[in-house]
Image (cartoon, rainbow, N blue to C red; front, top):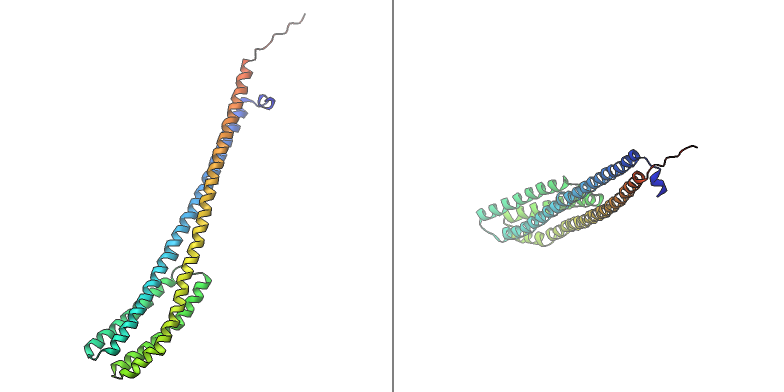
Length: 228
């Protein structure tokens, strides 16, 4: 307690208020920084992981639809129906290119960029086979069209699905990493809140000690000394 008596009243108040102010500023800054990071990470999960996953799923669905449409084209004998099916394949292919461009505009890690490059190579191969199947079928050479559909067309289709499946898997992996990072930030905020509470209790005790010392100083009656 002796140290409390040696501190002047103004120093006591300045020290207490300064400590509280410093802790509040630091805690507020760190909390704002951490909340901002968590918000950005969840935004990244949505814009750069969830949306691209939905895009790739849509792309794969259109590829399967094209596969079935090609088969219908081979089996069809009516010129009007064949033309309608042909236009549907072309429309789906154009939409696939648009979706892939949308996917490419999102944030991609190195493995995703590599997977996308592989996909583009396989895409060109599939489109080339697809066009040949349509030409043979439209020309009435159904046997050759069907054979091409079941051999080169089937292989090109499977090879194209591989990088797409890999891209979807990567979305999950990176999304999980972002979630874990956000979870660590939240836990850090909890620790910070406990620290602030602890410091607040410490400061409250400190102020109580200083005020008690001040009251004791006031209660000490001055003694008069008389010289003989």
